[in-house]
Length: 487
Image (tube, rainbow, N blue to C red; front, top):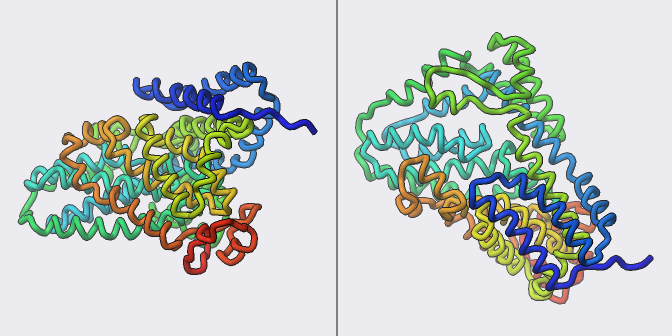
């Protein structure tokens, strides 16, 4: 069979420059990433016609990549249905209700961190958490006379932590999708870097908070939210049954999709049997999202979300990014760009550092965390596969850098957080402890080999010893001596 023509270095540089420009220019003007990713498809077609590449093969390879990641797309769609059902069932409102009830003036900063974490895990959005409970925390902090930079730092750290740990988050779905990993394995792998960084962050906020004599404060803002939730939903343990169902199923090793489906169905049942809603109305919510007019804009913004339609942007962003990546890989763009890097990356540490640098640089130049994940994942995940390193190590590193680091970059997430919380970026940047600590743990584990996982050529997790037998490298340091790598 005749070898298919591949892109050389200068062709690859030209193509990737155009691809990045197509994403950056619209993003700088406030456009969604979906349409630029869609436009890249015909642009790549034109390049293939000009450079005489085999478009039919590239298209076939792209669709093959899509087929392999169809489960991720199904999960993304299911998440929207799940969120709609869980708001209708009172599950998410109940989580918010009990989260707000946890506030104790003496430990306001660490509790702010915890509450925004809970909110972000429940909703899957750092933006939504900051714009909802985060605003409430800022108001309460102001009434207490606290440094609003500290409060903002606690809000953002909590929101980012929950966003990364939530299976409902777009970045948490995008990263494993573009690297070839799986959602919950990705989340489990992130625990190694996130949990110690989070604990240290919590301790720091506890120490900072105890320096202030908080005293009495006006709890009207919190009481108003909880009263409205209490007036519109039956708040009790029963409302938490859907989330308990999903957690139990996942612990019992039930596959992700069936677990989410059953979680949505349990939300439907609780909404009908406990919240007293009409079945048809709940089914409509599962498609279009929940809608309520409480008379309070703050609470309405908090609860009016979810539904299959709400995940359309994330769904198509993942779909088009997978197609784009499949085409770029097929015509050899990735191989040409990382060929020289491949020769120099002879240790796990260098591979992780290369991923970190690429993630930060891509976020800066594309103005988007998701765009950074798409580019970094597609450029470097083949190298992880070649070296027998689990794709979740790549996706974890991407999240540790681009997802968290976006809050430090004004034109990525900084402007949003600053505007929503009503403080300048310079006010909160000194207190984003989570964004500084997590990459340090990333480097530590890469240097020591701890929490570095290995896979065979079929992608199955294997131990370090099995990896060493399969992958013979001129540098043995590619198998840095972690303790036995378990799944």
